[in-house]
Length: 129
Image (cartoon, rainbow, N blue to C red; front, side, top):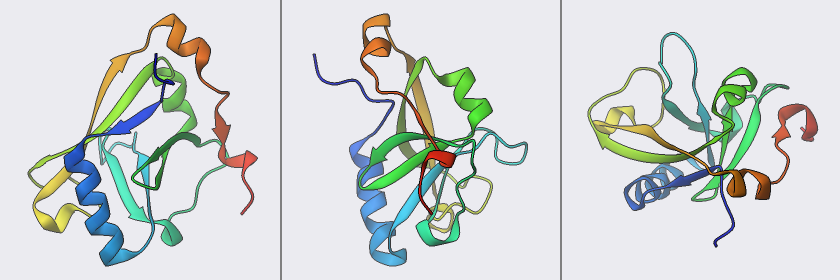
C-alpha cells in the first residue's frame, strides 16, 4: 500500500499550480471554510497569506503547502482531499480566478488502516515564522 496522504492533486491542478508559480512565485493553498467562499481551496502567494495558529497542514501538492482551518480539519480529519480544477469562476481572491477556472476539493473517506498510518497533524502554532 502507498503511504496515505491527507491531500493530493489531479494532473490538471498540478499543471495550473506550475503556471501560477511561474507568474506569482511560491504559492500555498488554504482550504476555506468561510461564509463567502464556501469550502473552496484558495490559492495565494505564499508571502501574502498568514497561517493561523490553529490551521493544520494537510501536505503539499506541486510544491505548494495545503492548509485547512482547525475547526474544519476536525470535521474532515477522516477524509483524503484531492484538489482539482474545473471551468468557471469561483468566488474570492484565489490566484486562478482571472483565468476562468477554479480549484475544487473532492474527497473520500479514508479507511481505518490509512488513518492509523498518517503522521500527527502539524498546526500553524508548531511552525517557525
